[in-house]
Length: 93
Image (cartoon, rainbow, N blue to C red; front, side, top):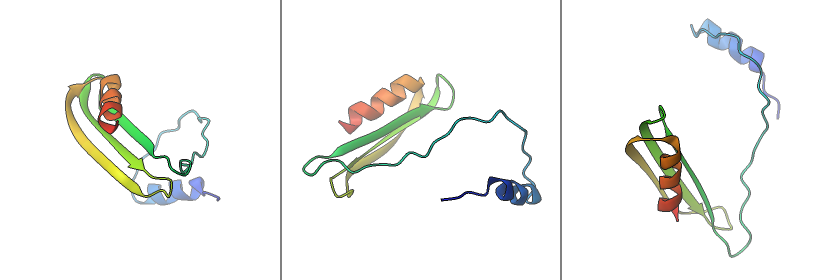
């Protein structure tokens, strides 16, 4: 799959968005894989706006067909990134 980043930047600039040049980062495409037959997979994430700051967390459990079994999302009080991540893991489990 090809992405035309230069064309996207031109369109965004015409819409009035301003961009500053930044150092290129190494990036790679990551994809989700289904769990083995008979298993479920837990994916979770937590983050805070600052560290500490307003935080949120969420998890999703999918079966071996990729179908959602259970999910949640939560707004959290002021927390660190690590505590938001841990909240997502514990709540997901």
